[in-house]
Image (cartoon, rainbow, N blue to C red):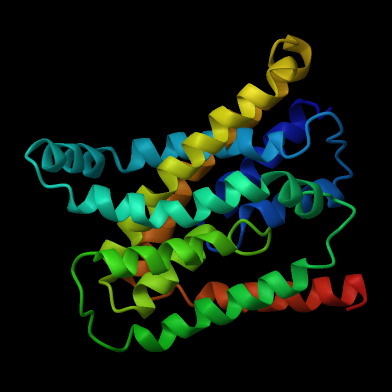
Length: 265
């Protein structure tokens, strides 16, 4: 079981990497390996609990947009809601049928051989946005066909090393969606997935929570991921507005090379 310091460190890592397109789950695995953090007895529960903190940061940062969306739905306009539902379906299906296999393989800190390939894929997708940004944005809304494609892209983020925000925002931009709309849709799309994962993990790991001595560090991690995540969202939004999303491809590519060397790939 992790201690308070380790939980805070992982929370900071989560808050930074959840929204910057560099994969939070991949960095959490690397963080646990580097700091030799013992996560026995918690498994992927640590990641999901920290995701709860970043979920809260999304709700706080985008509260005005969320309220506007609710008002739009209340008026009978369900287009955005339908787009989010359509984009959520692919990841929901994969999570429902392959959850145990994914957790057993990809969240094993002793198995990081796949990470170089994950980060290489992410770096290529991010780099492509450099050239798409030179063209005019063709769409000011997410049509249903594009929502499904973005949803398929989100599925790849189940694999550590492939960023959810990086994939969804990049694919949306490459489809010609306005970068502000693409960013907003990506964050709104994160809410149902993170919410379900958070509460589902609490249900499955309730025995951990009822032991106060073991669960308190996780709450500290939750708070640190929330605070860090809130400020990082602002940074990412600014970078996308300045057409600098592709900058992260350099980091992901270099990380892929280093991890490949470390794993002997």
